[in-house]
Length: 501
Image (cartoon, rainbow, N blue to C red; front, side):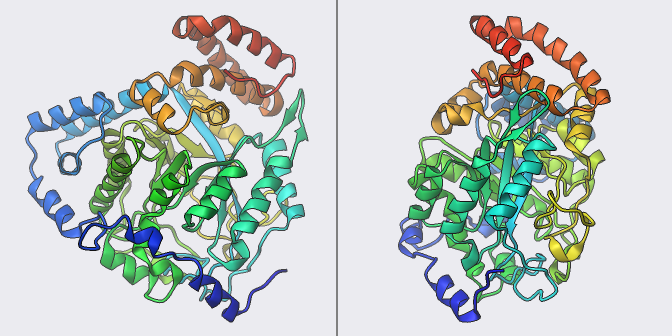
């Protein structure tokens, strides 16, 4: 088991933050773009919104335009049940126009839980001496990947790392390459991981360029909270993570490194949820302003969950109710209409099922967040091995079946990322609602793969009904691609894998 001394940790931490990669983004007064007082004032000014103004804002969302913070504040202050339902329906309509009835599935793979930070809400925090610390070896990564690709049928992962010298850029590169190298036989073909997204600590531009070279998918860094005082309180003043601006401008550095897709997020429950939604929208607009209109590829909105030996994870005055959680999903869908939206297994199955009808686009399944937990057997809720507790224990098979019952097709597609439908190009397709011209057909192909290679009899029967409806509709949606698609579909039935348009 690799280890690092406290002195090595301190020396490493001092080498990470590069002031020159922060200062160039700040305004002339040395301030970042999150103005706490302005956000609070905008929310106060938006109370008791006029219904006509709300509907005018919904028209702007339907036009796939990112909302101004003041407009988001107006939606956040809506309380009228009829207007809220109108907002929900509009958000779902926008999602279906931009992404169709597809839900992308993925799994998290935790690589290391060593961490030098002191986040009060996290089980990985350095002070938690009861945490069983693990960094997966290449052999263990291969075993985990074989289970994820060969047992569950996943094609897309989000790999997760603590912030620590044992999880430096060299380890990130090695672990991602190891995942991509695994190939597993299935009933009719083979399985492998085709896209590796990364959730890690903020990196400098040079490190981000290295990740891009090894096949980085989306790079995720969550601000956790946009409220400056709360950020300082929950992260302390001496840990590496205490530097608010280094974290906030990580996605600017990713853009400088020409990373095509970035993901932002908030840990709801640390501060007022309406303020945090405003922070997310402000972040999206800032990215659009600095990078040719390209905003976040995804937005995530996990809620604070119980974590082992983490006193800041016990909830409190900022806990977000289910009702408010579903409302914030609706508002985010309306405010950043083009973005992918991720609802994780922190939430219960019933909440996630409802979130599907609020405009989310991605869900994880068969999720295990303990280190090494996909290839070994232990209690899925064993606190000493994982970051927090889960709410939805559904397998991929169960999720696929539930989504099919609701009329949604599960997509395992990763094609666009490998043929250049990323960054500016994917933003144009999403804003014009043409992304589905390709992605829906690829969703059908990957759904066919998964049904044949992994589905239980009950799920396959339900999946067959859905796929026949999708095939009938596909002929009319993209007639120019239909012949090639039909050929690929027949080849997929016969065992060829990873065909895409």
